[in-house]
Image 1 (tube, chains in turn red, brown):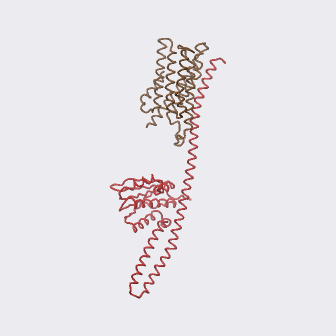
Image 2: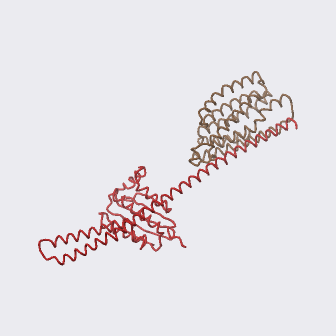
Amino acid sequence: MNFVEIVIIGTVGMLMLGILVVVLVIFQQKQVIQHKLALRDKDLELQRERLVAVLQGQEQERKRIAEDLHDEVGAQLSVLKLNLGQLSQHLKTGNGEAERLKETKEFTDTIIQHLRFISQSLHPQALDNLGLSHALDSFCSLMNKNKQVEIAFKTSGNGHLVDREKALNVYRVVQELMNNILKHAQATEVLITYHSTPSLLSIDVEDNGNGRLLDSLDQSRRKTGSLGLKNIESRLNIIGGSINFAKRTPTGTVAQIRVENYQPAIG
Amino acid sequence: MGIECLLLIPFTLNYKFLDRTGKWIYYYLVSSTIYAVGSIVFAKLFHNNQWFSNIMHLTQFVILSAYYYQVIKNSLVKRSIKLLLLPAVAIFILDIFKLEGIFVFNSIFATTRTLILLALGIIFFFQLLFDEDLVKEAVFINTLPNFWFNAGLFVYLCGSFVFSVAFNLFLRQSLGNLNTVQALTFVAGIIELILFYIGLQKAKKQYA
């Protein structure tokens, strides 16, 4: 082998080495990133599972409390109301006792109503029995009885069944949105529109308030202790849904909730 | 020379997309074009262009040192790049005036320069490989213009390293025909310019 051949082989060797180094560097970094991404995905999945477990536990506890309130305390209050009714029939004296008894009966009625509201808020029975659309409708009726805000509910294409877990999460999201509207928006009217197609569930919550809901949500996003919006986002994240906030004309805010593939799995 | 001029056109047209480091690569390309044109002109005028070639080697070394000074983050390496300029210039002066001469190819300086730049290229590759920010943000290095610029330089320097070492010896002792080695160096140069062009495309994407 002469000197020229050695130089040629050396040059080819170096050139190949250079190209090899470049290719190796690309692949090595790709592998590192893919490995890290896989780890991150696993971590996120674990966090998601934990969150689902926490939320499920919370829901079970709420259901238990709601049932206890409805079945135990509610039944006892109903008995109390009946007894008061019977007592009023036997009351003979006219020293204002009858009037006081009537007031007590009315007060018991108010307590029963409050109890129903709390029980419904804790666990909407209508959701299990009648489905999401009816549960939201009855939630609006219930809210109308207790608050100054007029809440209307409009629905179309509600013939589609909603998966139980997804329905519960969407219901909680609407509940949380209503809480925010009542706290921050100073609205007098709220309209909840429910619309479903076989593949997409859409719920719009619009209010005619001051439009500060958007700001308050923005602020709560930045605050570490604020859970409202995080709850909304976490719940929607779990069921693969999304929420979008926009300004409503002339005033107020529109929150658009969208959930794809919301129907229960068959089989 | 043709391909350098050709590549200078898209680089000039897209100059605004280049960041500070990309601009050094642009200056390197300009110097390569001057090197190519000057070599032809001086060869025709004086029948010897080696002194010009040696000066251009030093110029390009300074430009590429500035490039690596910008892209490398490690402060110790940065300081070393600055400090290495002095001995490199000293070797250049020694080589051109004492060791090999003005009118011959200065293999000693060319080899030293190539070795230093290869080392800097490897350091930059390592920096990219272990850059936590890139991993955190899941940024693949082949989306970074500087990766492609460095890859181009690295491949070219690898391809021309043996040539730098042996060229003087060939000229002095007429050991044989150098055409194949020169052709291989040209191939390395073409690969370098293709990789530079990819880098330019990535710079445009990044800017957008």
